[in-house]
Length: 66
View: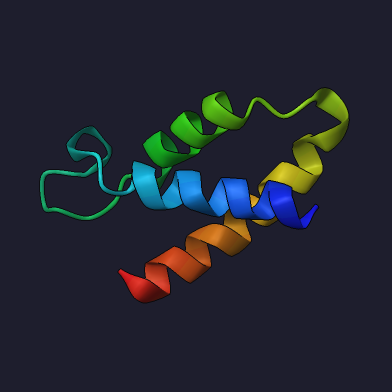
């Protein structure tokens, strides 16, 4: 699962840099980031819960660095 987390975190870091994932005030639109990362990682039905656990963890880590 560490590789899956690393992949999710990398995708989150990339997604928050995309202009289309920012609100007009420059803040991050996390719903758009979620959609991008979900589509890019394509979790299987039995890993969706794990995906969202790791996604939230990755977002918190990235947001702390942003």
